[in-house]
Structures are given as structure tokens and as C-alpha cells.
Image (cartoon, rainbow, N blue to C red):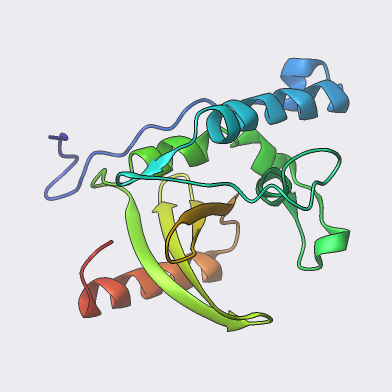
Length: 176
């Protein structure tokens, strides 16, 4: 189905081109609206499918009149009310939908995990593109799935942790 790269290595999955602020002459407002337009097309108007399951969308609370998921995919920070715009996330706004839609591509690493924290245990599905160091996180809500967040992995220790978690998942369970 897919070509091989090297011995036993799946062909790298190509991702769409990034969108840069420079393409909008440094105009942050125009850039932000262009990024939102891509998100709206990919997640509001044409919802992605994860292995045959059409995804929902966490819309509320609206942030700057935009869906909450958009805010999560384009801003960073641990405190929800203090998240700040992240241009690296915005540049890659075209990545999540294709990674979700093509999650069976042999290059992508896909696994499930659980995180316990405020609000209890949260079930997640992770989709990782290793060459791009980009992670898409889906929330498994039981009867439906939501795109939750997506971001570039910028620290080697985080990458090592993700790969360790993936390898443990593969060793102990079937792939998603």
C-alpha cells in the first residue's frame, strides 16, 4: 500500500505546507484569520474521520468568537485563562486533519493513553509524526471522539517520553 524507506521502514507521510506570518506581510490579524479559516474548513465545515468515526468538536467556551478547540490548537500554556498564541502551532494548522484522516498510514505512531488529573481520568488517542515532531491528541469520550489539541514537540525529553509510551503500548496491547 505504501512504499518503504530503507529496510523495514515505512515511507514518511508527507504533510501539507505550513502557513507563515510572512505570507501575510507580518499582519498578525490577517494571519490569525487565515489560520482560523483553515481550521474552520478542516474541523467545522468538513469534520475529520478517525478510522471511520466522524469527530465532533468542542466549541464552547468560545475564545475570541472562535471554537475552543481552535484556541487549544493555536495557543499554549497550562493555565487555560492565560494561554498565549503560539506561531509554531499556527504554522502547522493544516497537519491535524490529514493526520487524523490518514491515521492508518504506517509511518504514524498511534496509541491510547490515560491521564489522571483535575476532572478525573481522561482517555486520549495520540497520533505522532516523528519526522515533523508533531503530536495530535484526540479525546476519547466513549461514544464519540473530539480533536483536543495538536502541537510540535520541541523538547527531546518529551519526545523520548512519547516514544517510550508508544513502545510500551505496542508491547502490551494492540495498536489503535
